[in-house]
Length: 357
Image 1 (cartoon, helix red, strand yellow):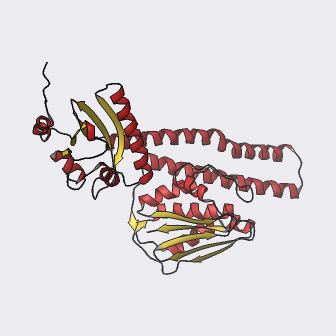
Image 2 (cartoon, rainbow, N blue to C red):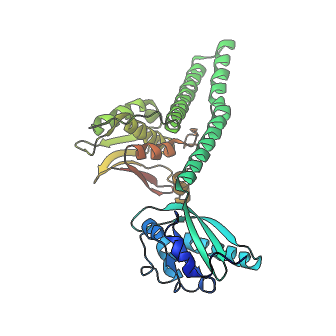
């Protein structure tokens, strides 16, 4: 049977009527030059570039893949797929990539390459919504697994400790000094347990989208003072000096409950990793609220793990425990309030956490 399309021109005649963005070029030039390249109208509309804007393959990669590492990775994978297809006499190659249209955010596309006689066609299918949905489902499953792990292990330990201590008190004769020490342990374990439960509840609300944002003007001096008062016993036990200087600080309206959770988690974390006799300051700089401590600090690797949601729990300076989710919760809640979280930290010297509005 005689082929439907005898030449590139035959394909170009119908390309603008097809629903997807298309590129058409001759096979012998696909990896060295775009001299014979054709963009259909949908491709120009989708990516914002014409043939004149992208005269060669290098320009295509530089504009559509702005991240150099990702660009090199995709280019290598793409060339390997093309070479393998030609060797195996295959007529189609597929790859999923992130492309950056002109003046817009990156999106996910499936790039399909069809070989036809002495030329080939690249079709770009927008799969961004499907990829984002799949990622959300993956994140939900990951969070569910994490919650089960916490419920099965991390929460069990403080509850078991409370039960054991209560049993000792009721079944044994103990001195007043022993009783005071046990009360101290009960207090610490109870605070740990309450903190874990609060974090889990906030994660659950976040994942099930049950949080309503109510922006209002916030008195940050009062808010920080109230949060510090909630942790007064922990602060006193470690003889930490806490300074608050937010008088007169104002920014855009934010949700009070969410900002309370954010500052509470940052202060709790600062207390946890600040040694006895250390310092914590809560102040503002430019348009940012800063929580600074003189604690153990964090490495760049640790900070990156927090940002990538891969961080696990680390015991504090007095062996305080946690569930490794506090700072990730802070980052997610900050996004809900239209804020960003930045970290500056030096190991063994301390950490600054910036809430940027």
